[in-house]
Length: 326
Length: 264
Image 1 (tube, each protein chain N blue to C red):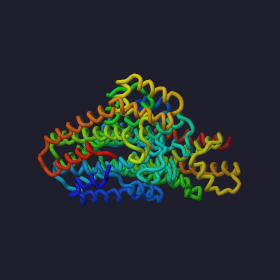
Image 2: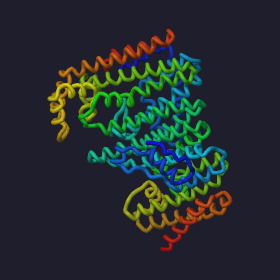
Image 3: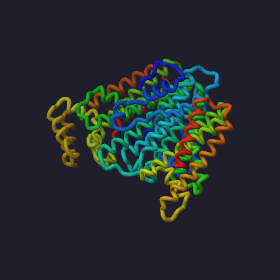
């Protein structure tokens, strides 16, 4: 995703985004130098900060006070950071966003301690809100996300999956935290229950479209564009929508996939053949159509909200997600 | 992952509810799910026993603390070594994720408490524990006293802070000595099996032996054990008016077992 282009869509929030950034920097000041370095490194690696942006935009539909809202926007990003540092242990990753991962720079233990430390920081920050519904909403979402990750491991290299399983997985993996970011921004700003619901629906549908698009790009992109080999999801045994559709609609494709993964993992040529099979099956077209349907639902949710600059920003972000290439 | 309908302060009920919450069939098929630490439960029950709150509120505080411990313990199981088989890789992945799931559960239980001050006590304690874990991992303490201090804070940091929050600080100090002694026992057992753990490594560093002499390790562990026994005996007397029967009995058992082992 092109950071500059996306950031242009909410440039007028830049001062408040900077306020969140300062809050994040203040949050990760651990006493132990390695713990501090690991946390600061994660922070400096940047990222799109899309969750805090959703929090801020949603909060504009209520009584917006950045000094209040930051106590939701920052912890959501911290929770995301904590999950990334642990994900790098799970995936045995050495690089993330062009930087050496914590587990690679130090070791697995440091990565575990850093993630747990950052998560506890996030919990502490949310305690700035007395509203138990806010705590419930975040904690419940994180529980669901963890279960989703466990089930993703369970479902790896399992070729007997269905659409419902895939949708539930991407909801937990991506859509939930975006939906909750939108809802929490609205909750923290005291927006009406009705608008909280519309914003949640918007976030959920945009999140689903975003993940489906991500899954499409994994098949359509080149290694140069993706920064990793194409078809990486399939190679890792993660059955995403294009492959799922291909296997469901063409038993021969399913058979070829099963054969390819029966012993050792397929080599580059073998994987390329499977990618071609998926492309030719109509799996990409089907996934694009489903992504468009989710985006349409996201726009419909926005239509229920007051016509403001923030609604326009959310609409533009949804457009951007629909158009994005790499 | 379901709640137990029974709402009592019975230790077995609390253990059952913990097991029900922490269970995931796929995780259980690949890794050993953590067992509730009965001693933690006994201390926690003691710490909040006099507080004026509903049984359910007390249970949720205890379960939150047990889940924190489970999360920290589970992540302690993540090893430094590379994984060489698919099953080993899967076990590591699930160990990380199970710990994260327990973290999400403790957050969920804390949310149910609707008590932001207690949330702060929990979250700051966890931050501090991870700071101390880093210091132990990096072998920064060069004296046995320093190592003992880290062990206290890692093993009982949350209990200590909770007891201070509930104006029962001496119970937290007793828990530090008790859980510290238990940790030394565990390290001794690990050592006798030829295993490794952060405490053993730290003791080795603190002993600063050049030759890796096995007897020196045992002697340093024995010194550490003795220090914790004396500390526990001290708090056994100091905290006596506040200690309930169950905790007192466990302290006596542990001291007796330690003395018997050192004589043996």
